[in-house]
Amino acid sequence: MKLLPATRKHIQEIMEIDQAAFPEPWSKKLWLKEIDRMHRSYYVASDGEGVIGYGGGLLAGDDFHITTIAVEESNLKKGVATQIMIKLLEEAIILGATDLTLEVRVGNLPAQALYRKFGMAPAGIRRSYYQPDNEDALIMWANDIHENSYKVLLDSIKRELIPKETITS
Image (cartoon, rainbow, N blue to C red; front, side, top):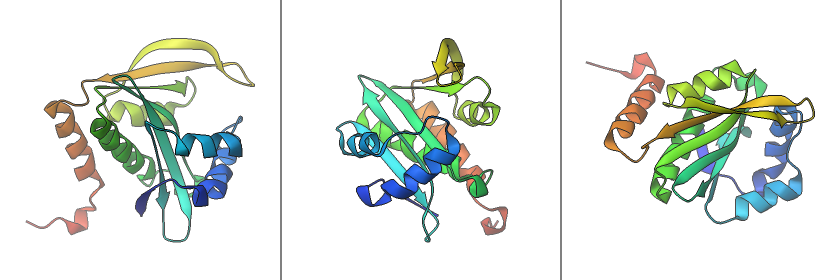
């Protein structure tokens, strides 16, 4: 699997995953606008045959806000989202972010578990944030992502992704 900066050539595949993953997917116009804007980072995960996941976010002051992340259903639970998160966080740190935030559906427990692995903690609720079903959003934050202690966390998550067979003593 490779992580590549999202470009216009990826939009159709991104939109297909987006439509399958979310009740209110982004429009093509919004996707094109987002990937071209300053202080944004969007990446796709490719298996060599096509896009199997994507994620992105924006820098707002010192905060990096993850705006979206999704993985093709047949590739869930294979570490794709974890690798996308690592890439986004590395990019956020390069952009100068000190803190990380996002909103996630209160009912999306697998996503919340992923974000907790990256040191994110609940900080509040946005009532009826998600449409059309009025589901609440859990606001999550991780602070001091630019500090060495956070780099240690990222490195430990990366090590977990290395297949055990490739580790030699």
